[in-house]
Length: 240
Image (cartoon, rainbow, N blue to C red; front, top):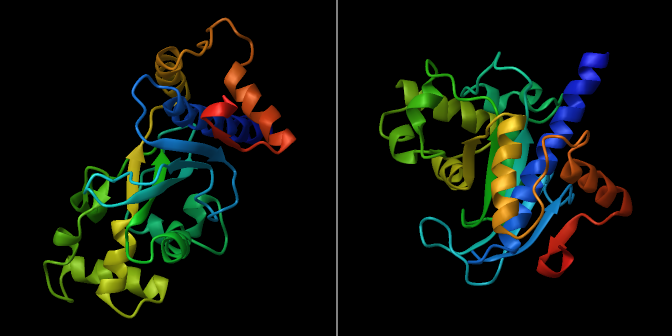
C-alpha cells in the first residue's frame, strides 16, 4: 500500500514538474508563442495533464497552424515495461478499464483537430518503445510515420497493424486513421530527478528561483498542489 501511494505521489510530482517546464516558456527571454499553460484542465479526457496554448499565428514543425499541445503524462517508477503497438490499444497502459490512449486520442482529435491540424496530443512517458516491437519501426522523431505504416498491402505486417488499429477505433478507412495519427507525438521523458534538473535550467532562464537539492519538499511540486486546491489551473504571463 505504501509503495502504491509513493508511486502515485511521484507521478503527481512528475506532472507538476512538466507543467512548470512548460510554464517557464511564458517568461523566456525569447518568447516562443506560448500564451497560457494549464494542468488538469478537463478539456480533453486523458490528455489534460498539462496543456500548452499558443498565440494566434503559431505553427507546428510542418508550418501548419497550431493552437495547443495536450499532454498525457505516464510516469513509471521502474523500467520494467515498454511502449508497443498493442499497448496503444490497451486501457491498462493508462491505468484504465474501458478506454485506451488511442480512443482518448481519437476523441480529442475529432474535437480539436478534425482535419489533423491545430492541436498535437503528446504521450509523455518515462518508458521507451520496445525495440523488438513493430512500433519501433514506425516512430520517427516522436511521430508515427504514415509513409511506413501505409506502404504495404492489407495482408502485410503493417497492413495487419492498420487493420487492428482501425477495428479498435471503429474507423472505416485508412484516411481516418491517418488524420488521427498525424496529431500524435510520443516523447520519452527523463526520470523524476532528471526532469527536476531540466526544470531548474529553465527556471533560471525564466528568472525564477531554482529548487535547491536541500529542500525537503520540492517547492514547485508543492506550489502546483496549492494552485490545484485553489482551482487556479491555468497560467498566463501575468499569472507567474
